[in-house]
Image (cartoon, rainbow over all chains, first blue to last red; front, side):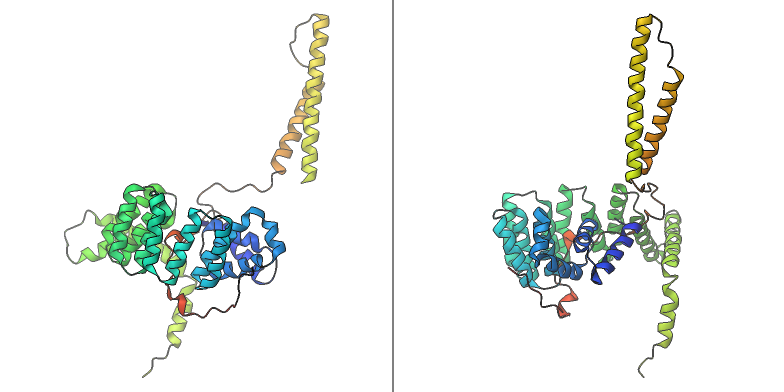
Length: 264
Length: 106
């Protein structure tokens, strides 16, 4: 969870590193801790550390974690060669490792060779059938190929075994919302709220889902007054949240729309 | 920080000295065969002084305290972490040309 203090620190470090000040390693550690996805910057600054042998030897044992981070960032930015070099370096150091095997599978995914990636993941799962991350990668692969129903099936099977994984519940909820299956998404969000009741963003997402369900069923069922209290509360919370967030952006939006000229 | 640390060390030394004085006072009482009813006033004063110094050092040396209220402004959760386990690589970022010709030197 990214708090307000951590976000300010991240932005400050990012500005500092972008403008030439030091602290690239601190920035990379913070990105890794907060699990944000800033692949371009990670790639740029990570490579600058790795290409400098003095800074690399200063890291000691942590340079391999940096190799992994830079490899994933390179795959995200479509620089497959850099990723391949990093993975080769890791392979030389840790020849029989599961993590390196997983990275090689991700490289095949990034190249687009889905069948080879599937084969690689299955062979890794044979040795270690209860590896969580590889099963999640299979779901991600199904999603990337556009096979959403296959992804949902895989994810449901995964959640039957690992019920406490909140990231997977969140992913399932987002997939259901993208397919407009709001009742199932509301169930997933309820699970999330049960695991982590102090995260306000899950409550807001749940309110969103309930409001959507209410709106969709308003036309069909005019006598349903009992469950509408939750939905009106949800709508009120959302209104407050939108007002708070859009206070600065609304004037900008109206000005842009006013200046927009439609081609006639 | 080092000033607070010195005060802390000083406070611990005062407490140690007070302990030593108490032991000496008890051995004196054993010689005089009297009951150990209370400490002499200067030892009690020394104890209080040592307590004040140690408390002050303990509060100032560790640095800034973090807030524990979940709804204080500092702890307000701004965004959720991106689900990196489910990251896909065939997004629309492929059409942006990669501006850097960086390579990993080996």
